[in-house]
Length: 236
Image (cartoon, rainbow, N blue to C red; front, side):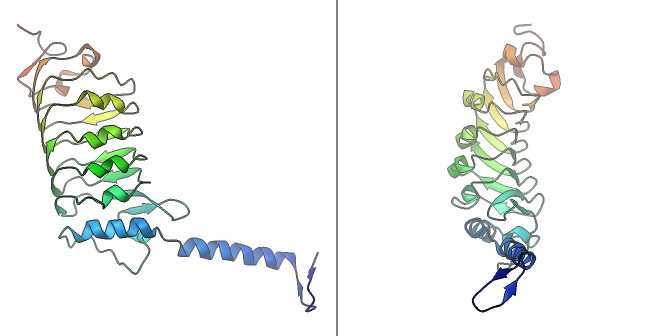
């Protein structure tokens, strides 16, 4: 049925529907995660690399390594492995990407401490910071990420103990802490979903908790002070 206006123009409903669809599509194309875009630009500007070329005049959703949600309002994935990033991660950059679900910065030369504002990444499911130069104790901010399923901090320079607070990560299926400088006893980790664990080549000592005894010996290799199943008995 046509729509009549006082101007006597007749506009079929089909034309109105088409105009509405075009309006929605145009809005989607022009959508821009402005807040996240600025955080990403601030992050990149602090690292001297020629392998990532982000054009500030284009949408962040079109940048290499960046993925946005369906309506292009938020960045949900940032993958920048092996792109020559050097130096620390500044606060108020990555930590502002509050809708992020996947973060991969593996195999760069990032260093220093993990910023405390990583605790803002409440939607994060997968975090890959392996093969960098990070240091300091286990980042407490990461134990607040309740939805985290996979955490890889391997091949860095972390020290100190592995905190009992890793049990806060109840959704964790994979925890990779090998080739660091962690010391002290292994905490009792009770995660029912944890299927993959690696703490090899650290400086851990004491008895392996019974909750972890079902993992293979390779999980604990290279820690001369560790003992108990699946390694040789303590005091043997």
